[in-house]
Length: 183
Image: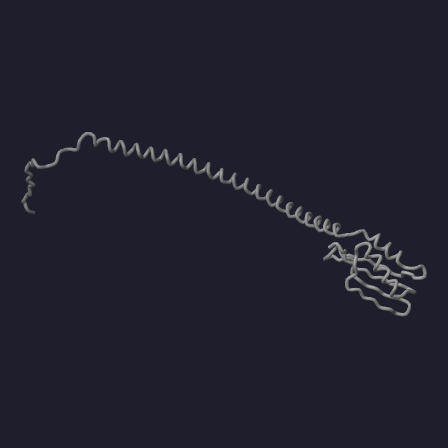
């Protein structure tokens, strides 16, 4: 072994930096205070987050209830709209309907006593409720009775549209559409 001893000789230096000011001693204190503050704000934010989640669940429950109620009301509205449409259709049907008793009475009065009406049908059209489909069968009559019948209907302000008549022996079949003249 060598007996050589190495010495580190350091000379005092004047150009070294000075110590940090005393105000820098507050840096660690501020660090720990900021850690405590961050922990506080994290806790407050976490509690607010949990409260917001609960409020969100409550709001979703309320929204589901309101949506269910809205769907019920919408279904009820659709049902009422359908009923309204049916009622309006019925009102139009009734508005287009004329009393058929005067028509049948006018047809019966226009026939002489020796002629018999074996069949009289008055039907309303679903597309045009104010028009009536007339079909009748006359036994023992002639074409003149049909003319008298049309005269009686014209007094009630009805006219025959596209009349069709056929004679089979003593039986005359007559079909026509009666349209109100004021339309």
